Length: 295
Image (cartoon, rainbow, N blue to C red):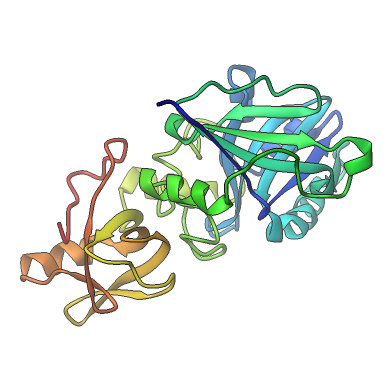
C-alpha cells in the first residue's frame, strides 16, 4: 500500500537573501552553481572556510525576489553573520526568517498534495528517494510558531529514512569546521560544482577532486545489534578508523578512514564500533571505487 510520510523538522531554520545582488553574492561564496536554479527548483550547497572545510550546509531555493536557504536551526545566526561579512557593497538583505516558516520533509510512495499558497516545495536535490522539502509560511496568526496543523510523524522517522539511504547531514554525521566536502559526500550528492568559478575554499576542493585524496568518507554501516551512540569510536585492531554518526537501531552512518580500514582488513581485522562488529553496506548510488572494508 502506498503511503506518504510527513515530518516537521523543528531543528531546521531558514535564512532569506534578497535584493538585486543576492544571486551574485551567493554565487561567489557557496560550493554549488546558482545557475542551476534556472533549470531546477533547488540546489544543495555548502559555505566553506578558506581551508576548504564545511562551515554550513544548506538548500537554496528561489523565492520571490530572492532566495531562501534552509539549514540547521542552530547555525542560522552564524550564517547570517558570515554572509553579512561577505556582502560588502552588494545590494542584498540577509535575514533570519526561521520564525516565519515551518520546515517539513515529505517522502514515500503516495500522492503528494498541492503545496498551496505560502509554501515553497522542492524535490530534495541530493537524491530523489529522499522526497521533498516544504518551507511553509505561517498565516499571520501563527507567525512565530513552529507547529503546523494535521497529522505528522516524529522527525526521527525522517532521519531513519535518510540513514537507510546513506545520506549524511551536517552536525549529525560530520562536524562543521572540520570536514571537507568530499568527506561529506558533496561530490556524490550534487553539493559541489567543479565547473563554476571561484568561491571560498574552492582551490582545496578542486585539488582533492583532481588528486583523488579523499581518504575519509561518511558511509553506511550495519551491525547485528543496536549501534552505540553517536561519537563512539570505530576501530580495527589498534587503529582508530573513525566515529559513529547518526544511528537507527542496527543501521547508521560513520565517518571512516577507508584506506586504513582496507589495510587492516587485509591483515584480518574487522571494524568495531565500541565492542560491536560493524560492516559497510553501500547503497547503489554511492560508488567509492569498490571500497568494502569490514564487509
